[in-house]
Length: 352
Length: 248
Image 1 (spheres, rainbow over the protein chains, first blue to last red):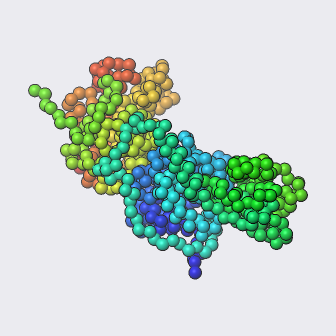
Image 2: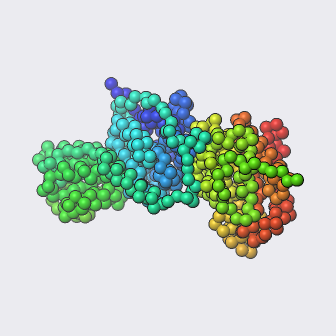
Image 3: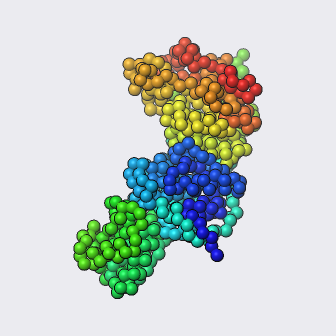
């Protein structure tokens, strides 16, 4: 029987069991329990915990640890993740693996404490200066948050890039049954600094940016080809397909089941990887589909852009794409169903 | 007769500093000290942004070119996860005391057990000589063309004195490269700082007064004279703290 666990604590313990041996960060609601848990737990497993003076220092400590071959993780939210972008682009530049948890909260500037999905575009486009991508994993339950934490480390290590676990304030704070992963044997990455100059480096002014860019593109192509993940339901006969991730994705799934019970032919795609976007899921959609609907917890509609671009690429560019951004919180099954009725009756205009 | 000095083994190729610059002397001293302490193959550098970056292409050593100002944070984690390695933060005054003041000060405040070598040439050298937090009162730079007005820009920061008097650091000193005697004395400071790290005593820092003839608009020799006449009266040389002598 799985124990009840809070989302943040499940992520922290799963990271320890996945081999994380460095945590550095600065507290911010609603991510703070991850840091609090790490402050005592890291010591128990012989790892390093550093309370940094800022998020900027925290992510730079992650760089220092990762450069020495240690599995490293930091967590923050909203404005804290903004401060970490400098380090995330540096990690990407140095091709250092690390896991960054963004416990998304709503708002611009210092924002609010409300659960939301307002950082979708920032995370899926890299976020910092330059031209890079990070792998973005989106859990919709505490169990999935635990599972994806382990996967985040595996993918970061496999591709030597940053993985972002893009969770939401409500998921971080709620408790659900969670089966934790097995404790992993910890080994340093062989390419880390050992003080002996085992792995040669070229001078910083001797780099060939053209070659590096082409190699990075090849890597990102491999990630896009191999690491798309999603959950789907009822796509083969669906006239309308919902696309939604995280907790709104979970509500959407419930709404789809309810609508089908009422006789509507609807289906859903719940992206588990926001980058790479699960383009392959759309190959399974009914060729006679009448519309796609993105359900999001942000103000402007962000996922809907990836949805429209994917449809364009799949040759379904003429199918209407609707978007219902619920701003913050978790849209309930009832409201999603009601808004579907409006779309069905032609009372809501498509976005694309 | 002049005494020959063996080139340290980790010195790989020439570093492209301007004629008369002090960086090369300091890097050479660091390499000599590490070799004499048998730590030159047990070494990780965190390198700042600015002229200090040029160390990156010249030494055969593990090294990471950090984001501007963040060496204090990067080196903190390097030393925490690799406590057996010698970790050296190599930065200029702009990197360490302006954009990186939070990271530099916080590492000293936590008494992180690495060594910071900070080159103070009273300006941002790499970007063409702008005002820094160590620019002297009245000093003309490309962003203080009438001379630094300390009423609105603050007084030059004295970092070794700050951390020696306020924090529990292991070692803090300021040296200079303006003549051979002081170069030798600076070497003894760098060595003591590294020895403090080897003994695990805590944070050690050596600031170095270093000439920047290019941006000072002076000849190399006049630049050395400026250090003696203008800089040392404000930035006194010596050891401000060590575990055996306490706070000076």
